[in-house]
Image (cartoon, rainbow, N blue to C red; front, side):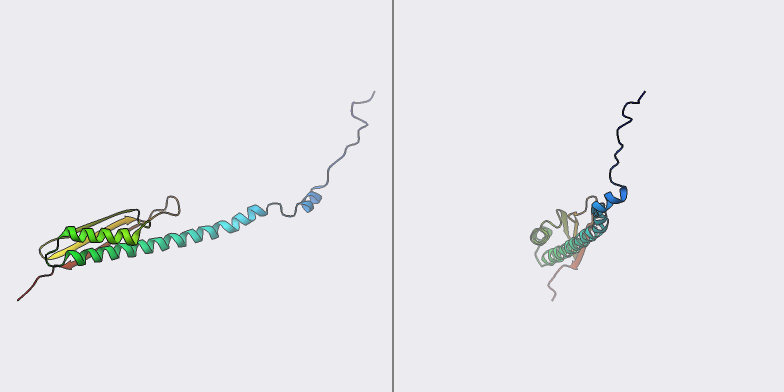
Amino acid sequence: MRRPGANLAVTRGPSRLARLREQPERGSVTLEMVLAFPLLLLILLVAQFTMFYFGSEAAHTAASQAVAVARAQGATSGSGQAQGQQILDQVAGGTLPQRSITVTRGAAEAIADVTGTVQSLIPGFHLHVSAHAAAPVEAWTK
């Protein structure tokens, strides 16, 4: 009695080595990603810290300009606040999407504080900037 399929010849495919020779680039995408991902991350980090530096400089510029206006004789803290906000709008633009400026003027000193959050290029990576400027109020002396 014959077993079913006993006379069928068993055909095997090409050996594993032959298959690998036919596909020499197998796994190359994985290797490319392993090499490219750190480079991409480094580029994003450099761009993020460049935006942080630019945002910090914009905050310091706005604070110093706000104090310069608020400390003038006859000026108010509102005029300093308006000048600082205008500078932030012109210079910071999209770099500091969340920003605030506070200007106070006392009898002897004008103070400006600017805070903001830098636009994030890397999800979950939020950098904050702050700037402080103070100067004595101008007064005429005899």
